[in-house]
Amino acid sequence: MQTIAKRCHKLKPRLYFPDLLTKQVFNYKQSHHLKNVLRLKVGEKILLFDGAGHEVTATITFCDKKNVHFELNGEIKAVDRENKKSVFIAQGLCQNSRMDYVIQKSVELGAEVVAPIITERCQIRHSNNSYLEKKLERWKLIAEHASQQCGRNKLAKIIFPQRFDEFVKTIKQKNSLNLILNPTSKKRLVEIDLSSNKRVVFLIGPEAGFSDSEELLAEKAKFQSIKLGKRILRTETVAVSLLSILNYVSGEF
Image (tube, rainbow, N blue to C red; front, top):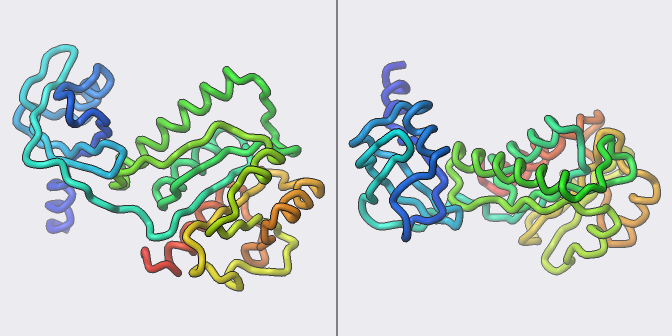
């Protein structure tokens, strides 16, 4: 127990900071988090990452009421903690807390892209772009915090919500294995060869699933239909299950 406690104590706080080469002062929100939440003081070290694959250790050099200043320790290094296989999670737009959960866990488990999809059976319907833009900013912040926590140095891309028909028409086929989840499918995920493609796209329905017309559109767009076992999972559980399985068979776990 003491060994585990010592290891946890040695872990440096991580913070997303995209301007590693141009700035050495945190903004007000970051400074507040460092001073008042983490209770860090001058002389303590933190780990900064730029969201593009680089990280560096820094030392806090100055604190005042508004800002925290720092200096870099050594070189900015490229540190790759990304999965070998690119994963695109296309998630049918679901209720607020569930969508937040999908994005958080998808980022933690290595998804490169998460795309909210507006489907016929979405329980949340908003055509107001200003509302969706606000949600997108929230989702990007969730992805940022998830990367900060799990050790990823590249930020996952969170795409502005698309309509189902637009998405299946525009998704690229080259070097991509496109799969749509359907609990009535006869084919299971374990029957799919996941090793031959560089990218896997998982299309997941909202709480009420996809309509017949949407499933037909996906079939015409060359999506393969698969299921996850004998039971029907909650929509927010599906992405976690798929990514966990894929990470296991790809040797990430």
